[in-house]
Image 1 (cartoon, rainbow, N blue to C red):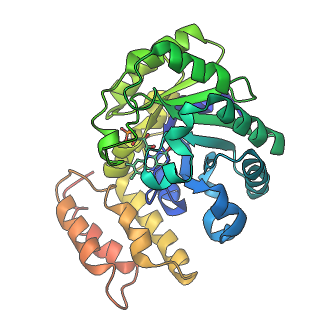
Image 2: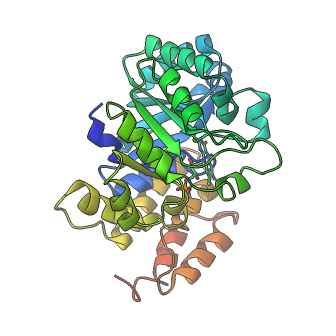
Length: 326
Ligand SMILES: Cc1cc2nc3c(=O)[nH]c(=O)nc-3n(C[C@H](O)[C@H](O)[C@H](O)COP(=O)(O)O)c2cc1C
C-alpha cells in the first residue's frame, strides 16, 4: 500500500463504521482511508462471514480491523479477509472493554509485546496485504516512554511497518470504554517522539482531533492522522479532507447531493433486506450544526423505525434544511 494512503483515516468504531457508514464517508472523501469496526477472529471463523465481511466496491481503500490474540486464528482470518478484497489488515491493541479483555485481546495485549509480534507475523504470513497495528501509549498507570518504545520495537520486529497510536493510556480497571477515550490524558508528544526515533515507521496519530487545522499541525510531526468521533458526530467535515490534506483540486462534495446519493443507496439496500434505521442512523452526523439540521435529524429519528417507512423520508427531511443551507 502506498504510505500516503495513511495520511488521513477514519478510525474503526464498533456500531458506527459499518459498510453503510463507509459508503457515505466515501461520497465525501475519495482519499480517506476507511476502517471497519473491529471484527473478532472467532466471528470470522465461525460466524456469518458474508454479513461481517462483505462490503461495497466503492469503499476502497478500506482496512479490516481484527480483534484476536491467537496467531493461527489471525492467520486464517487474514487469508479470508484477503479473499474479500480488503486493502489492509489491522490488529486491535487499543480497545479496553471488559468483553475484549476476557478474550485476552485489545489493549491488554500491550502487556505481551512478543505475542503481538507473533500475531502480526501470522497475519502477514497469511496474506500479502499491508499489516498494521493500532495501540495506545500504554496500559494502566504505566508511564515509561521506554516501555512504550520497547512495545513498538518488539511489535515491529514483524512485517508491520505502520503503527496507529491512540495517544493516551488505556486504564484496564475502573473506567468504561467511553471514559477510556476521555479521561486518560493525551500524550501527543510521545507519538511525535516515536516518529523522530523510528523514522522508518509510518506513524499515525489518533485521539481528540477535532478539526482539519489540528490534523495539519499533527502532520508536521507524523505521517498520518486518524479521526474517530468527529467523523461520526460531524461527518460532513470529511468533505474538506481531499482539498486540505491531499491537495485534490475538486470542489468539496455538496451535502444535499451526497444525501440524495445516499438515499438512492438506501433504496437498493432496503430492497436487499437491510433495515431502514440501520441505514439512516448514519445521516444524523451528516447534518450537524447547520440551520434546519435539528428538524432533519428529528424527522429521520421519528420516522425511520415506523412500519412501512421508506427512504423517501430522507427527501422529506431534506426539505427542512435544503432552503436554509449550501
Ligand atoms: C463508538 C466507538 C466505537 C469504537 N470502536 C473501536 C474499535 O472497534 N476498534 C478500535 O480500535 N477502536 C475503537 N474505538 C476507538 C476509536 O477508534 C478511536 O481510537 C478513539 O475514539 C479516539 O479517537 P477520537 O478522539 O478521534 O474519537 C471506538 C470509538 C468509539 C467512539
